Amino acid sequence: MKSKAYHWVPSLYLAEALPYVAVMVIATTMYKRLGLSNTELALYTSWLYLPWVIKPLWSPFIAAVKTERWWVLLMQLLIGAGFAGIAFTLPTSFWLQGSLAFFWILAFASSTHDIAADGLYILGLSTHDQSLYVGIRSTFYRIGNILGQGLLVMLAGWLERSQTVPMAWSITFLVLAGAFLALWAWHTVALPKEAVAAHTQQKKTGESALSAFWLALRTFFTKPHIVPALLFMLLFRFPEGQLVKIANPFLLDSVEAGGLGLSTEAVGFVYGTVGIIGLTAGGLLGGWCVSLHGLKRWLWPMVAAISLPDLVYVYLASTSASFLTVNTCVFIEQFGYGFGFTAYMLYLVYFSQGERSTAVFSICTAMQALGMMLPGMMAGWMADHLGYLRFFWWVVACCLVTFAVSAFIKIDAAYGKKTPSEA
Image (cartoon, rainbow, N blue to C red; front, side, top):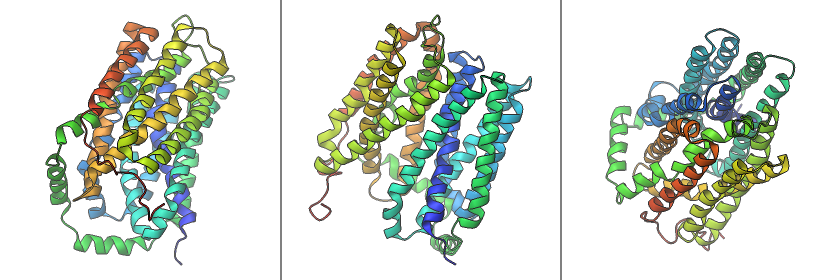
């Protein structure tokens, strides 16, 4: 019997979101609660971007070795085991080395799962269904963010009331491991087996994996205007790459240390619910605006939107703010980020158009990950040495880099705008 898309698309993209959120967001909050300095936690967790940076190196080999369905199931099993590994190492004396080792496993498994899941989405659905379900996959990816950034962090905070901090986070990761293994069990039944035939045909007619990779790399670096495009990909998010590593530690740190002294539960609510709502609303508005007038018309408003709201952290670091004020400021910043990030992602799609567009886009997303990894590595050291207030002023100053790299990219005036037939 043919697998129904609604049986597996929502759960597949829920499964794609959870490990990424765990590696990129939950790890930072957890390590702060376990006592690491900002310098240490930002450096260690920024290195975890590396699997996404080098993802294009092995993505051509995924389909050449086994089917996308096989890879999805294997990686989900490995991710579940990785979550369990973190849970069992946190109460031990080697908690830092052990948990980081399992986070590395999670990062590589998650990036490989991304490749296979997107491939399965293409092979397992008709062109019509791909368009039909694109909104559903995005929605469930957002739900995964809410569950990870919000409810799981809030669960850890609630458990901290009655358990030690390591044990509270250990139980939280055990819950996550159990949930992920349940997803794996469901997908062994629900994922489409008919995609195997499509994979076999693709494998027979396709280029060798190695030659495909080199051709994609050559295509990427010989594209027109590659230098300004590369600078845009690497530096557009230079302020955000620093801010994202320090925002949660700032909310958690004591007032005496310059932070806001919020509880773990409160931080989960602020970023996992209010923040995600703002991010989603900003992204939806950004997509709608571009569809009306094109990306070129909205580029500078979007650059301003992703940059100027960073000032809310300067305000929060310089005053005694109520919980309502904190939520309002985070909503504003995340809304602006969601609106402005639309320009960045659409430019990557625009730049990838033409020959070998899928492979070129994969390289673009690798550059995106590198653009987050490098500034994130230094963010903790700067926050510890400058203090939170001066660090946030530094982030605002770095927004000039975002404006500078945006000034030199070339965009077709009509790109992103609905055609009369689409309207």
